[in-house]
Length: 140
Image 1 (cartoon, rainbow, N blue to C red):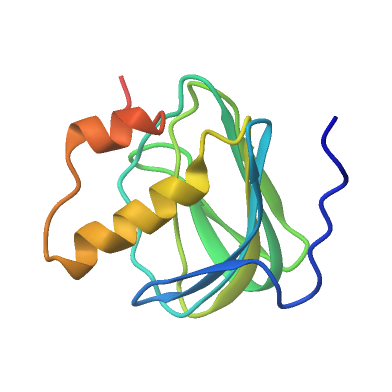
Image 2: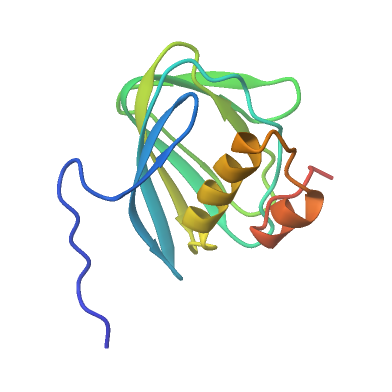
């Protein structure tokens, strides 16, 4: 039987990108949770997850969450959004934010984050197969 996972403030596997730093607090089969501190970040591509939920809880600052190709809303501190399987979504950081990103089940999302940074560091675009491996698909 697995033991309790305990991660202190400021701890976790660190993944850095050009827009910020994510501290991965847990990345297990049933759950992924990271605490991200980000500067401005443009809206990522609208996508769906077929097999897991993707959620955001804003700790500080503001994020923008797209709910379709034409609709989005801004969430400030204490705001929460969850995209259940099949719900198109994307997000951006207009100025700065600190937020939790949660995936349930976990889908090895920490591996995805590290892989995405690797593609960008090499100046390469991630492949559709890479995205599909982590349950990231274009909206229908």
